[in-house]
Image (tube, rainbow, N blue to C red; front, side, top):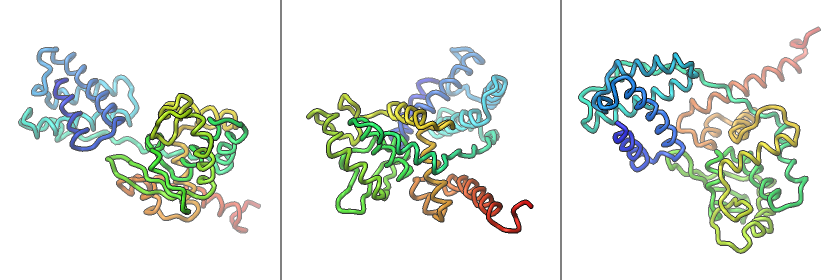
Length: 304
């Protein structure tokens, strides 16, 4: 079965253009399913052909018994369903054992954006330091909040992805499914990027050739993990008590745009969401903010 899992992962990468993160998630989920099948059917019997409805239902029951979160169970079941469809298409199965199995419904988590004051404090933090790394960090944080990019999109940017001159500035990034989108960059973020490119990036590179836009002190492309540690450090020193991750800035970007009057369709395009329903989760936060404003300012809504 594990050979077929690798064939499926190759298919996702080569033919569907799935990202490395997506491939890694599928590999983790399907390796877990393979291990369960071996424990249930025996290692010799646990082949792709042996997958049936009872094995899949047993896998779901085992996940629930181990108290996995509903969202995690839903993701793992979705992986098994996609894998089964692949096996059916390639003749390994004569029928799809997951066809009559409903995926568990996981509640959509409500994003937790930062307040505008928290964002201002975070973006101001690297400006307190006089170093090439701090100038780079200021540029990265400004760009992420200016565009709502995913962290993978941010660290994957190359020098030719960014266009500062002539104004207005813009950046081209490659999103999920290898879909390219062009994003505007406001003037404050453009100035932070220009400062970084003028002196900080050359200081980090020390004449070493590198096409990546954002680099570490060794002159190499900055990683997702590296950015996460940088963000975590600034959030702490800025005194932000809420949990801040790279995706928090993306959530904040979307929520603040909607609160400012942007349409859901516009925000969907900026975020690179394939389905507008993914973007609509942010409208709940914008509506909550509007209700709070109404409650506070309407003369008949305020408590006596």
